Amino acid sequence: MTWFRKKSAQLPMAFRRREVPDGVWMKCAGCGEILYRREVERRLWTCGRCGAHFRISAADYVAILADEGSFTPLFGEVQSVDPLEFSDARGRYADKLLEEQAGDPAREAVVTGRARIESQPLVLAVMDFHFLGGSMGSVVGERIARAGGLARRERIALVILSCSGGARMHEGILSLMQMAKTCAELGRLHEEGVPYISILADPTTGGVSASFAMLGDVILAEPNALIGFAGPRVIRETIREELPPGFQRAEFTQEHGFVDLIVPRGEMRATLGRLLRYFADSEGRRRHRLPAPPAPAPRA
Amino acid sequence: MPGGWLDFEQPLVELEQRIEDLRLLASRENLEADRELKRLAEKADSLRRRIFSDLTPWQRVQLARHPQRPYTLDYIPMLFSDFVELRGDRAFAEDTAIVAGLARFRDRPVAVVGHQKGRNTRENLRRNFGMPQPEGYRKALRVMQLAEKFGNPVITFVDTPGAYPGIGAEERGQAEAIARNVREMTRLRVPIVVVVTGEGGSGGALAIAVGDRVYMLEYAFYSVISPEGCASILWKTREKAPEAAAALRFTAPDLLEMGVVDGLLPEPPGAAHRSPAAAAATIGDALAGALAELEGLDPGELVERRRARYLAMGAYAPEP
Image (cartoon, rainbow over all chains, first blue to last red; front, side, top):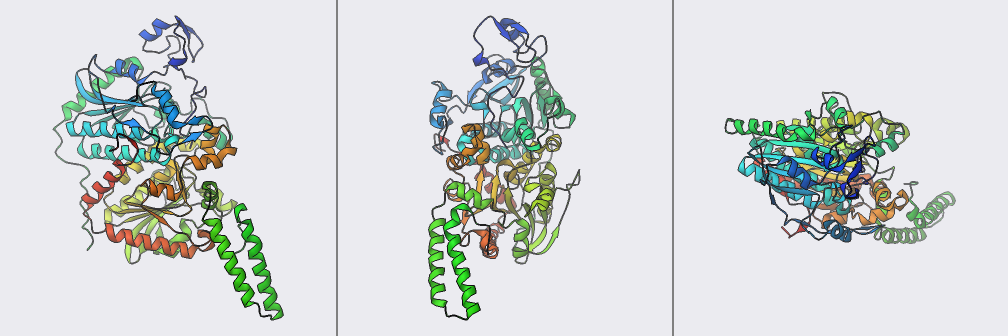
């Protein structure tokens, strides 16, 4: 049940851009190869030798996925507070937030807005692991719910890229309730025939995987992304056994039937374009409305 | 009811023992001890009230996890009649960490779903300590949708350390099972009334806890993460669980104040396990009250109100 995970080496592919000195060379966390930084950037932050997908910021994903200049950020005015006045061994959540915001109070673990991909309009939400492990607190839940509402009213696709350890402990039960909030909005999209594509990046676990991330009409994943409910350490400590190789990786998750396609970062944009055109061409063809189970008569 | 005393109840134990000894002595020797017994009983009551009026969050956790605490299968016979348990998710397996079935509640047909812990080691092995596999959640959804089919309300009892973190559970889509339940419960077209009776263990609890009315027993707790899990991440040691328990603000009064639950159901003196029947009576009245309010609503209106309830949850600036 540990939904929020340390940003540490439990995830072999872990690679934190912030920690990389702005040098010319860098080392792949996957295979150890020394890589020319400009070349890695050109490969959309993947390793040319082993194919490792390095963890990148929401801004980088937006640049990679959206048509140039098409992204209009929305809901940045929804900003974090410290509802529990939470503090732990290392200090107050309020201070941690200020530190992570680095002067920009709109900065949070998700970026939401309008965008176009291969000219198709959509509402895009991208999570950012660099902000408190991509954890979902009230702001993440609210921005995602608003993104869903916008997509629904305009009948354009919702695309969410998840990259999160799960719910944010520092906001307690309110973080858990964001699972219900986001799912409530997705239920409306489902009923009203508005498409939703979920992309799973490394990692997608805990309260994020156990809510909107696993509910896509189509679910895509980046290669080797860690995808699961419980984190590997918690499972290992519970069952007191070593975990099988490849456990909870995207390929494993696909083999077990929970991911449609594994898409390398360089092909993500084209794949989304194809899906978005399919959905756009389907718009207006539907003649029924979900759920439409006959309403049970109210009891007298 | 002897036994099962927690550390913080120790001052009571001695007093209760004196009462018990005196009662035995009086009856054996045929002595008149009523006045003294009455005096001691009053003293015990006032001591109990004092202890229970000032519990720390960690003490509440111990009560919520008390091995004698009533579980779903204890409440069912006290609250419902004609219970028919339904088993299996129709896809892979039966999961006994969740019980589900059809029953009558004060003369109306309902569906009942709840986590089920074991009372001893043998039972706990069978019930997996109340930690469900994906099949438990899928069975729960199946039964809830059965209730929807017939227009009957759903009543759920929440008491789990969390969804089971195991290899098989991951392979069979623990995250997907929870996500689907949460989404479907926001749009189920019949009333859902939830009672958190013990431990509300994160997503494993929420997967059967989305409702039109959510109540909590007085000493239950409901949290995004277990106090031990939180302590091991943020304090680097599970030993700090009591500190984490306080920081997480997960007690029934906290959740009531935050608007996450609609009501706190008072427990009998010494907590629910000292008088399960009294706890059940309180729950029964809450359920009856909630259903009376909800059953008249048009299903569309019911769903819209439930969605609005969850869409309004959270704390951010600017205030909504």
